Image (cartoon, rainbow, N blue to C red; front, top):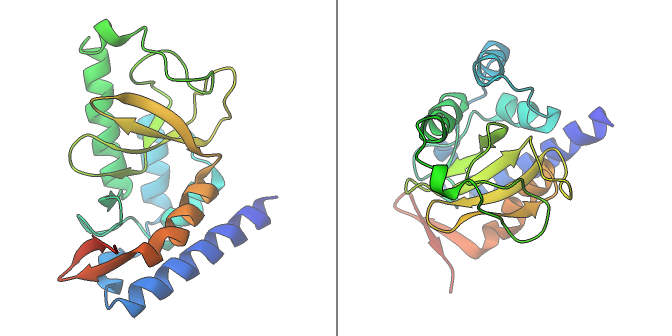
Length: 186
């Protein structure tokens, strides 16, 4: 199973890298994270990342700011920074009036943010894809959800990280990179 997951991550990244190369934008995706960086991220967050996420970080430690179709694919440091902001807001009580927020269905736990959520990408405005390591009763550990700072969490948008990554790869033909910025094709 682990070999299948690793192969799926490699296949998705191969496709993504080909697209970036064809766009002349390979510089927008960053070099690999080290094992030490990934271990430090897990230790600091108090989570064990799914193998697919670790494999992806070992391939590319995120993207430059704005270097991903949805904004920025977060590096180990970016994940830590983004999750820290959300956790600080949660622990300071900023979400107390939203503690009973319920997304459609039972895939997500009640509330605006969960300690077991790990940001994957970010648009710079408080929105992005999030790895759910603490799902609701109808969800699955490792599902990927959408977090919108105004509308709240929703999803899942992918059953797991491999689904998220292959979904991004499948949508790349809808985009072009012009002057280092993503432009959605019409």
